[in-house]
Length: 101
Image (cartoon, rainbow, N blue to C red):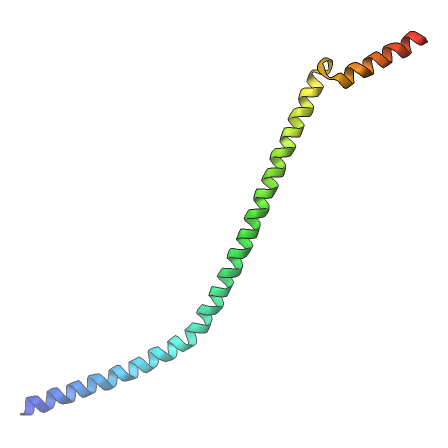
């Protein structure tokens, strides 16, 4: 009988201690949840900014590629002026002007 009473008191003591600890944990959780939500909002903002930066980087990469193509085309024209019809026309006009003088 003594052991039964001691066991019942032990169970009650464990329940009381568990209830106090549970209250403390709930209090910590309630104070932590707003911080977690604020951090979550910051993460969402950072993801949006990252997505925006990524799209801008892709756009700038496309422009860079286009400009590289333009530069390559211009370099090709400069290296082979005899094949360029505009250069040939200018040379013909210059020859005509030289011939008139």
